[in-house]
Length: 109
Image 1 (tube, rainbow, N blue to C red):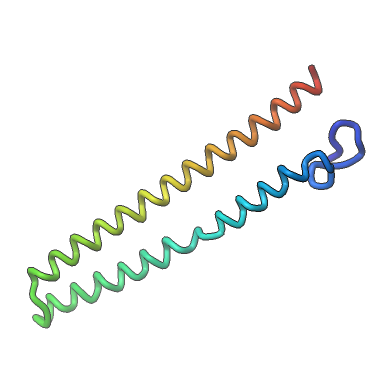
Image 2 (cartoon, helix red, strand yellow):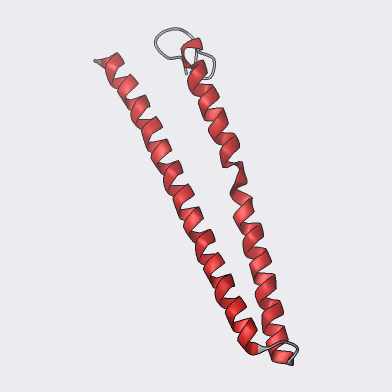
C-alpha cells in the first residue's frame, strides 16, 4: 500500500530505509527462539538420568537431590529469560505501532 501519496509502499520508500534496516537487525537478534528449547531438552534428559540413577541405586540420592535443585534453578532461569525477551519484544512492537499511528495522525492532521 502506497504511503504519503508517493506511490511507494513502506518496504520500498527511501525515507524508511533506516527503519527497515533496524527491523531487519531485530529479526536477526530474535532468531534464537529455539535455543531455550534445546536447553530445556538437555535439562529434561539430565533429570531423567538423575531419576534413573536414584531409582537403580547407581548414584547417591543426596548428590542427585542437589543436582535436581540446580536443574530446577536453571529451568527457572530459562523461564525468566524467555519472559524478559518476550516483554522486550512486545515493548518494541508497541513502540513501532505507536510510531506508525503517529505518522498516520500527522498525515490526517
